[in-house]
Amino acid sequence: MFSKNFLSFLVFRLLLVPNNEFHMRQGIKAPLTFFHKTFLFDIGRVLLDFDFESSLLKLIPERINNHKERILQVLEQKDALEAGLIDPESYANWALKIFESDATLPQFYQAWQQIFTTNEPMWRCVRQLASNNHSLILISNINAIHCPWIFTAYPEFSYFKHKILSFKVGFLKPEFAIYQYAIKTYQLNPVSTIYIDDQPQNIASGKALGFQCWQYDLKDHQAFEIWLKKTLWKR
Image (cartoon, rainbow, N blue to C red; front, side, top):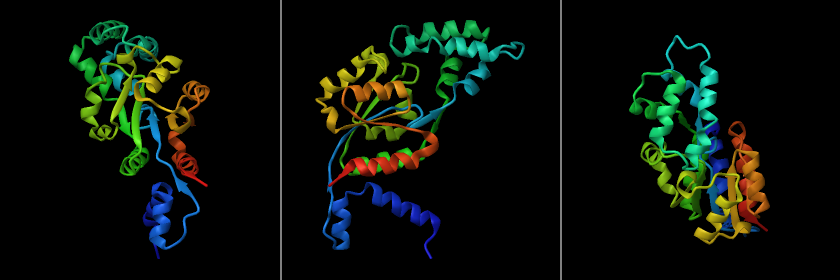
């Protein structure tokens, strides 16, 4: 009797191992063709989940009552940081004033960084895709407080040979410019490029430019794997 964990692993292997390879192992003529692809991966709520509020709350003095409103006020200006329009020190000093906090800059940076948790099911996919020689590229709205720290804190980002980071390129998703930058810089053919993101407006831009897109849901990883199987294996 096979265990549940073994059966789950077997399904996962069947999903991502090239179909021709699997059938050859079984001595069966392969009815499908496996195509190597380029993948564009978002980070937040795809590779890593995040929770700003719980972490930033630690910076706000107990005497402050409207902490949620203050955190929201700080996060509403996050796009400027992620577009590279404001430097981390200026943003942190402004945020600490909003919080009426006596925390230091290093303490703010630490709280800003300690928001992530790993989405292990997606990392299993990443490892398998890398082992099958697919090209993996990050495309993320992210800032200079998180980078390059995040790539040291999570070494498996080394599977991604290229990184398109909003604060470096000066464009934010869902602007067409960041996707056009990806196409031009890495000579991408959108038709054979798979783009994975959790935000509907980003997916809409990707589809408009011709990418094969999947709007990822952390609560339904299995749906992504089923779609991925259909996308990688063509008759």
